[in-house]
Amino acid sequence: MNLNELTIKQAHEGLKKKDFSSVELTKACLSQIKKIDDKIKAFITVTEDEALKKAKAVDKAGDFSNPLTGIPAGIKDIFCTKNVRTTIGSKILENYVAPYSGSVIKKLEDQNYILLGKTNMDEFACGSSTETSHFFQTKNPWDINRVPGGSSGGSAAAVSANQCIYSLGTDTGGSIRQPASLCNIVGLKPTYGRVSRYGVIAMASSLDQVGPMTKTVEDAALVLEQIAGLDKNDSTTLNKPVPNYSAEIKKDIKGLKIGVPKEYFIEGIEPGVEKTVKEAIKKLEDLGAKITEVSLPHAKYGLAVYYIIMPSELSSNLARYDGIRYGFSAQGENLMDQYLKTRAQGFGAEIRRRVMLGTYTLSAGYYDAYYLKAQKVRTLVKQDFEKAFEEVDCLVTPTSPTVAFKLGEKTDDPLTMYLSDIFTVSINIAGVTAVSVPCGFSQPKDDKKELPVGLQLIGPQFAESTILRAAYNYEQATDWHKKKPIVE
Amino acid sequence: MALSKEEIEHIALLARLGLTDEEKKKYASQLSSILDYVEQLKEVDTDGVEPTAQVTGLENVMRQDEMEKLDKETMKKLIELAPDKEDNLIKTKSVF
Image (cartoon, rainbow over all chains, first blue to last red):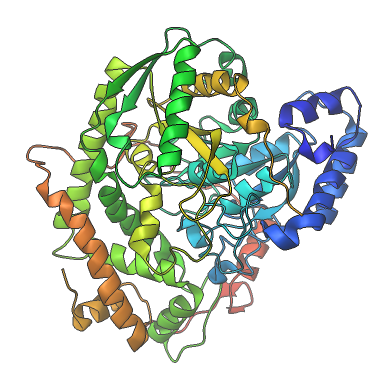
């Protein structure tokens, strides 16, 4: 086995026992990037020299007591990383070198992690396929004619193709879970406020959350333990103890009550995905879980709520890109002209579309009909989950209604693209937690190729231990996560 | 719900977003189809339902109003990021 194929857990044990060095581990990842990233295009920036220098220093210090020390990670290009270019996949920040590291990156730096580089993403995390990136399209390692999902598509592809040991992503409506599902890796969206967003470029602030993208459930638990917790620089983080997730997940799931929301098995879901997920649910039952049907009556409104709240908050957050303080700046005749040109040339088509939409739904005369109405339905969506969690410990659904679709297939029709998020957005709307774990393979409607399917486990706020435990028990009883793409 | 060219121009100006004529046409039809899609929320009865802005129930998180001093290196870098500058200041076109 090559070193770049290791999980965090395996790499950590190897480093501790001095089976190999952090330099060797880092070189293995860098060599995989060199070998296949021309095809996959997962990385916007590769920090080879800095990574090797850091690994050398870590080896010299020789203290591998923390599970992330000396382990190479690819980080989504939405995280501010000090002195490293941070583009958010946009022309407007194409040359932006972050003058500081955000809180989560600072935590990883304090544990002497190795930054391999920054991974590609949809511009400002707006997309479900990584095709809106200003730089290039990332390919799915399982089929390079298909999308890796998005917006954290570069992260998912890099982990799946063993270009790094793990990655960090962000999830506003499914941007960790959906690409994890399409690339056969594990992706966790923690509860809103569980992980600090300070130094993470804002998309939609009432929905954004940071989370791990890993090869195994145990790795996701290990990363979450390191990054979760209160941060004085993010007033939405909560002062709640961070459980020992990696120990909690190893308990069994005998008697665990798992609900299957009937609204999630609807028309539009690929038959193969439905079949695969139903088999996975049967497996959870075999492992001792008690499966019952539940109802989330407002689930069908989740996407409409999302496509009001998200663009509204996005348009507000993106007002700061004025071409004056940092980022791309166009020449204009006067201040207004400079604003108009900077934002016309600096933002891509999907961003301009969403900023227009958000500006409209927040504008005078329309605020009540759109944003306020959406926030009220948001309350009902949230209450659906609360009621369901009075009956069951967690919920199980497909992560995505389809397997990976073809590049370019949905780029002309925004609404069709938005439907990729139909099973994931409600989780952000309610602020609860969910994880996607590999659960099998299925053929797309247009091909004989078998592509990965993800199982989504949803828990109440701060029940990461519960969903990770269910996911871990399922993963240990199956081999899906061990299947790797062959990139030639 | 169809948006007029005037409405599109008004929104673009509010958003400080320069648009070409072609984009105005494209966005008028695309925004209309998205707005048609979200119209479905009208069928939900929300009488007496409070809006949710903060999902975990936190409110009014306070801190001391204290200044944090940045190190000189970071301050220098922050100024360097500006597209147009003079001495230690960020330069902008006149507002009026």
